[in-house]
Amino acid sequence: MEQATSSEGSGDSGGRDHIVVEINESLATSIRRKMESISSSHSICKINESLLKANEKAYVPAKVSIGPYHHGKEQFKFMEEHKWRYVYALLSRRPNLETVLDDCVAALKQLEGRAVSCYSEKTNFTSDEFLKIMLIDGCFLIELFMKYSMKSLRRRNDIIFSTAGMLFDLRCDFILLENQIPLFVLLRLFQLVPIPKQCTFSLPELAFRYFKNMIPGDQNFHREKFNEEGHHLLDLIGHCLLPKYPKLPKKLAESERQLHSATELRRNGIKFKRSWTENLLDIRFGKNVLEIPPIILHQYTESLFRNLIQLEHCSRDNVQHITSYAFLMKSLIRNEKDVKLLEKRDILINYDAAEKEVPKFFDRICQEVTLNESYYDGLFEHVYGYGRGTRSWSKRLKRSYQRNPMLRLVLIIAILALLLTVIGTLFSVLSFSLHRL
Image (cartoon, rainbow, N blue to C red; front, side):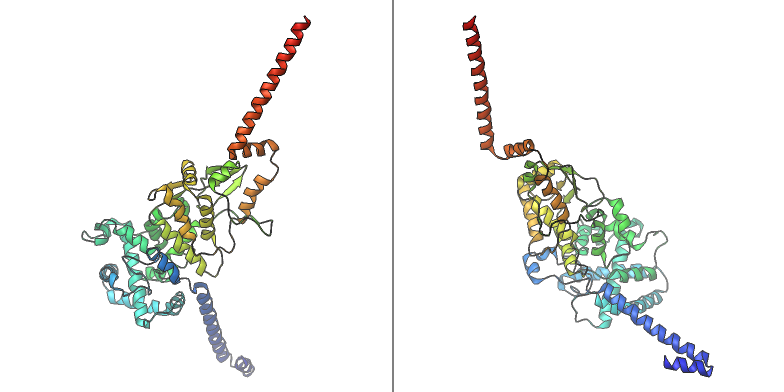
């Protein structure tokens, strides 16, 4: 900057402007890179070894690897060849394939540092190998999403669409935290690759059409939230589930960290109602009614929740919405009676598990996971405040009467004794009156 000031005194304004602009560009570039590095840092984490040992299927891909963590493993060689076919189909839609390829590689080279910083663990791949993984996996996903939405792009012998269950298996692999590439890589490639004229969708719209049946809740609502604001595909799914209702503040320093089971709450006068809100995590309580949106249990639901929870735990935001929901459902569903109650209220829709297995489902999800602060702490206070608050003695008596069979028997005997006493008294009065007559 001293150079720029001295040039001004000598009248050399052109040299000064050049130096200032050069310095400002350098500063702006360093600031941009720092912001990008911080915003995307470690958004794709490795799963803890103890969790992998407990349930490897929930975290490790079965059919296809995306990103560097599982790249090159023997079990993915078959799908690796199919990826290359998809990449060729995508890039060869324009006659100048090499030019498009050069543009993609150059663009990824500019994003390389930012992309590398997204992964919490370093890999042994060289710069060229890493960029090749980003290119092939990114183009494969783009082509797959387009083929899924537009049947005219599919070939008759395409194993992904002609093999029963393959699309489902791939979806299950694409929702795994270790099986992701940065969303900004996908978006940049989508800007450069030749897109067919019949494709009028954006990349987030294409991805949403592919994943929509896996996301619990209202699809119209999720479509709006499935946008470019996310680190990767799993993160976009997580954004769809974030609650719309504001968090209820805690009034007590030490409050309940969980609810009683659903059947216990019902015995205490709490009613359950299916909520029609668009969002799975929007749970509210008022006028002794706990409103809960329906959740559908599929064979992929456990894996989805496990990976979303791990995403929350590797995030620097320290917000645990999905974890809070899992712990809430774990506390509500403790046995088959709880399952039947919530099924009867259309809150729990179970397709793939026996009723006795459902409580274990939420137990497994919450194992080896720490909940620092529940999003529902304020809600818990309201629920328990209803039981402790201004309820009349008659309501409390009714609640105790419902809960305690012995008390019920004692009350019946007491009422009968009272009736017999009254009847005996009436007979005595009548007898006395007749004798007087």
